[in-house]
Image (cartoon, rainbow, N blue to C red; front, top):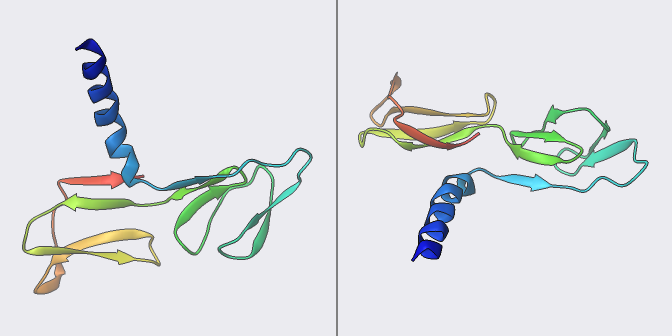
Length: 107
């Protein structure tokens, strides 16, 4: 019984992390630059950057630079703003009225 309780705890702890996205890369020894395959650019080891897919990157990998709204009023909709790298939540019938976000996942 104790084992099942521990397993349940681990699964519940890891579930929220599954909504964020990260990719990991193993740098090669002696490497002085790494390649961002999304933007086709080289970056010096030790640097960090945000690519055109709204991923915050280093030579070790990239992670999403935004959170995803999951809980907001039913009369609202979430729309991704690729320029700002964030989701905006507004009324379905009036985009000028922002809605509250009660829960989100990621970043």
